[in-house]
Length: 373
Ligand code: SF4
Image 1 (cartoon, rainbow, N blue to C red):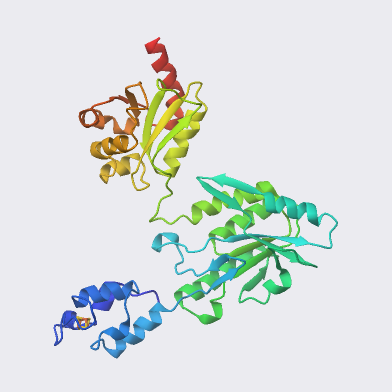
Image 2: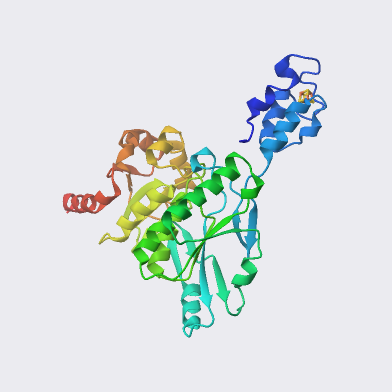
């Protein structure tokens, strides 16, 4: 049974049934509806309303059961998922990536060193191997395979793709849709050594999407891990919280007071698309990042998160007009219609309409310079 919504709960309460005690406030909420909405978010207790019928209590308790356990291993949380699809709400804990170090192997120290030192940075996030699992011995900061098998986890040894994928889907469905406790343990898939890293990458990618809580590899390959981490970052982003970067002035290639000035929003993907282009320009530049709740340019504008007032306030806060002599700000081409209103609000700068796509910035700057020259 999926979780009850506020409206579904409300239907059982006195105000919906128009009976005695409607909106009596004894639960501490001003109305039955307010109480129902709080209950749906688990911000209050079902026992606080003395008039909630037994039927509601029963289905509320049943629907509130956590479908999958959360297990913490060496500070890494796995499991705790509530939905089958990310768009229904969000996924909770990303699929952990773990590597096995067999201390009987002659090269184990070298492998351990590579695993510990492997790190990639993507969209502002520093990504490392989540867990190191040792066999035939132990080292600090790792867990032995023996100890791992004692935890409440379901293990799948990956021998056959169809079998593993069907088991993963079946276990997750039973846990989420049926809230069947037999299937509530987080699941890991164990990959033995293989020479076929391409197939390993394809299978591991599928299991990240559906529905492994942890993947354990005997093999360690930097390219494989970087690919999986990149995919995982996309799958496990909370759809309600877009990836953001800090709102500030970013500098590229040591700009001075006459350098080019660009502007965009703090949506991470937009920022990195623009930043990559600015980094590779033959001239230095600034990038002013406006706080727009992590929305992309047009979305931010339509949600009124990128307005002339917000831009003016940001420039003021950053004291930017006093830092530069250049009086031209290049805005994204998608916001061409804002040119006049921006110029009215930001008295210190002229607005130049830039490109719609980030990849065209290089040509745009070339044209700008040849026009000025
Ligand atoms: Fe409604 Fe029950 Fe709260 Fe009274 S105590 S307001 S009946 S929810």
